[in-house]
Image 1 (cartoon, rainbow, N blue to C red):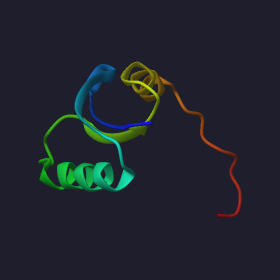
Image 2 (tube, one colour):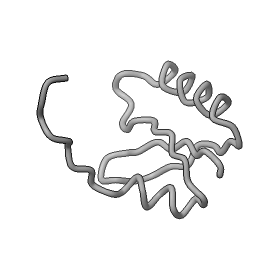
Image 3 (cartoon, one colour):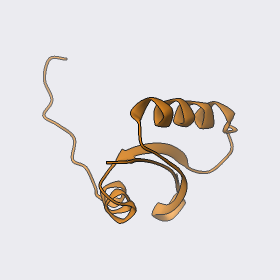
Length: 72
């Protein structure tokens, strides 16, 4: 399964930046993009592992509930 890198903009707008077959390449690219992003630039960079581009976008749009509180 490929790794997708997206920029998530305000109002849940997704911008696909790139696609990789290996985690190492995708991780390095995502870190580089985060480092280059200016502080006032809208959106955040996310890395997603999914079967298809459509599935990656669906996973990025899902609301995640926080886990239970406890001793960390």
